[in-house]
Structure formats: structure tokens, C-alpha cells
Length: 219
Ligand code: ADP
Ligand code: NI
Image 1 (spheres, rainbow, N blue to C red):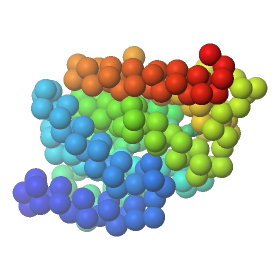
Image 2 (cartoon, rainbow, N blue to C red):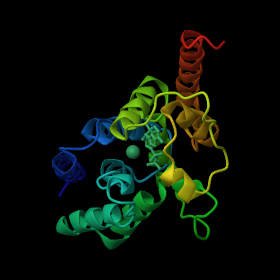
Image 3 (cartoon, rainbow, N blue to C red):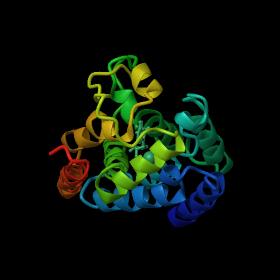
Image 4 (tube, rainbow, N blue to C red):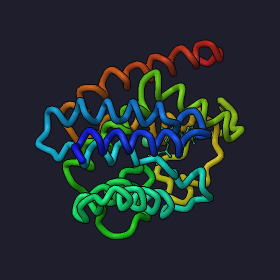
């Protein structure tokens, strides 16, 4: 199979798997992450097939939609790659990326030194970019609505330095998520291209928040 045939098969599999996904974690999120990842990969010496497959498969069973189960995503991705007879090394690398890409795995309670590779860094930047800017704002409020969260409650302060468990359990208003995650992303980008692309998206979120508070009458 050529690389583009493999990628085509993965696209079909991911589209079908995410048919009923929440709007911020659906096929279009994957498509944007894939496009970002390819753009970033152009400037890095990476295995583009690994980057492509990891970008396409990274959210096929996000733990927050599966009772916190963090093994299901890697398991389904592993089964899919096995069905294509992919080389064991490549499969192992793609699964490691899927296991370690998540923001929540950067919290202190994570076990041991996390896996890293240039391919992981590229896909992680691509995923983080989609959590920022106009798209990032839309995704955050969509997820907040999906979880029936408040948009904003001035009495509930954002919590920095949460443990991974606290972060996963949080029920806070969506505005808090900006301080707990979205505004922290620009300083966590791995690649030069990722950092560059993050700047504009970060500024857009700051402008949004300024206008938001103005309209709430507290600025
Ligand atoms: P990861 O899957 O990298 O750990 P998250 O689960 O925190 O990242 O979130 C992915 C996206 O889902 C976020 O960028 C955001 O758009 C949305 N999201 C997750 N948690 C929240 C939350 N508590 N409030 C609002 N949006 C959220
Ligand atoms: Ni994602």
C-alpha cells in the first residue's frame, strides 16, 4: 500500500468512528489537526506517515467521552493499524503519540517521564492550535454546552495548579477553561512553526475576553 492509500483508509475509518461525536471533537477537528500537522511537519525532519496517522487517530475514543477510559483510544487505533498490517515499529510509535498527546497528561500526577518524539511534538502542536483562536473559543463553548456548564460565573474562580484528577472532574464555567488551559498553550508549543502560529490565536482569545468582560459590565 502507498502512504496515500494508508492515509485514505484511515480517513474513512476515523470519519465512520466519529459520526456522532461532540462538535468540538468530531471529524472536522481531526481534519483541522491533520492540516496543521502537515503544515508544521514541512519545517521538521519527521516521519510524515507517523505524523499523519497519529493526527488522524488521536481522538477516536477520547477518554472524557468514555467514562475516563484512557486505554480505549490506543486499543482501537492499534486494532485498526493491525488490520492494515502496518510495521510494528510504526504502530508502536503512533500508539505512543496517542497515549501521550493529551494536555491532561502534562499534569503532575502523570506516572514517570512521559514519552516524547519529534513526531509527537508536531501532532501535539497541531492539536493545541485547534484549542486556540476562534476555533478554540467555539470548541470550548460547545463542550461547555454539551456538559451543561455555565458560560461565566464571577463567583467561581479559575483554579491553577490542579491535579490531573481535579482537572478531569472539573465542572467549572467555560470561561475558567481559558485560564486553566487555553491561555497556557502558547508557552507550551514545541516547534518553531507551532509557536509562530499560536501567537495570533492567543491574541485573538485575549481580545475576545476583553470584549466579553466589557459586555458583562465588569471592565
Ligand atoms: P486534551 O484532550 O488535550 O486533554 P481537553 O480534554 O482539555 O484536552 O480538551 C480538548 C478541547 O475540549 C479543549 O480545547 C476545549 O475546547 C474542550 N474542553 C475540554 N475541557 C473543557 C472544559 N472544562 N471547558 C470547556 N471546554 C473544554
Ligand atoms: Ni484533539
